[in-house]
Image 1: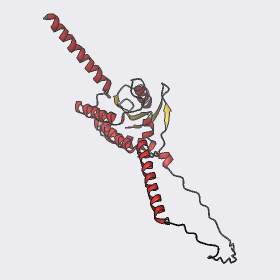
Image 2: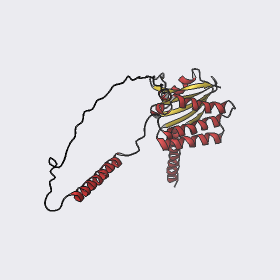
Image 3: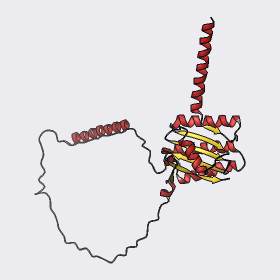
Length: 252
């Protein structure tokens, strides 16, 4: 009886340890500066879980008060050295340097273009300036969610799958053949063939023609340069680990 009880207790301890390790592996909110309430941590983590399930990318929120480096370097290194995904986004509230910072990696560099980065920092700044740190992180994620849902700027989404394209081409070909043979059968002469003698029953009158060229004026104007390239561009840099990141910071 004692032996069986010991086995059961050992199993319970093992299950708890596994559960803790699995939970820890999914944690993406690291409030090292103690800026969030428990409910805010839960809300931010829930939003991150939702986005990770929807898109398959990684999202991290960090607060810090002992950075000892630039905010951007800290954010990049925090992402690189903590085993997060190859495609991801990190939002840092740096109380040491008084900056909010965004670090992007992989495909998220393409999603967070320079113009979108400015908008995300605008939203983050609006709330940290009022010391609403939890709202700052959550609203940044909300806006980021909208950006990802809208797609990568300048990239046309493929609205049809490969199978749908094949089916569409096949259906179009069948309809085309049906129309062709239907018209052909309606215009075919029944019985003997008929030949129209166009040489004897047609005439042609050829008259002379003359083109007169007049002077023309061509006005050339330079085409205005579009700003789409700038809006769709993401500046990048290299972190201490040699990885490529996008992102930026703003003081508060």
